[in-house]
Length: 242
Image 1 (tube, one colour):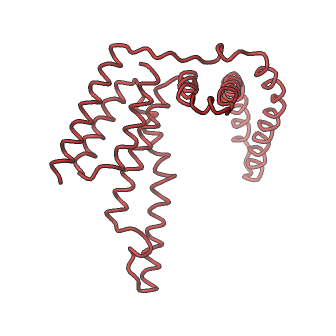
Image 2 (cartoon, rainbow, N blue to C red):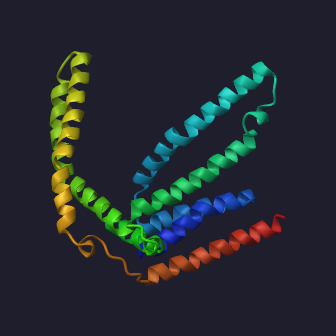
């Protein structure tokens, strides 16, 4: 599928939840997101990891803030709504943020890094017209990503061997020292490779790293048709809920 088409669909799907009032539309959006998860070829396991991260980064802090607001309102004898939103507003906001999180995660999990960078280079073309070095920045990002990918297998192997050695030690103090040593070594090695990355950036051409040309395939056409039908359904439900 064309990465630009997927970016457009994912962006709109992430924004729509903040403009709808009919709760049934959230169910419709959730079902559609599940459908295109399979359509995009994203792995459900990876999406579950993304949802777990969402829970730790968004839901748990949000709930903690709500509990603290309830506690404060109890002591100061004020309505909780003066400190925090009402419970239904909290739940609505969490659902909206989740759909936004899921839509963006779906795009990045189902699209190759080169295609993502190339698409952003095209989308940010207006910024290039005003003189911002967008392409140069994305070129550096792409070079760093390629270097990290090249380092990945070696770092993983070294980390696994080091962790195996650490696990054989009995003292927690020794284990903490061992893990700290591994992290410091990784950071130092990364800084040592900065010169190599800089040289790579100077030598490589942008067209060798990423290029984007919009190509609408049959799958993209079907996706856009289903997306238009979704938007029509959402608008219809919103109008009849007024």
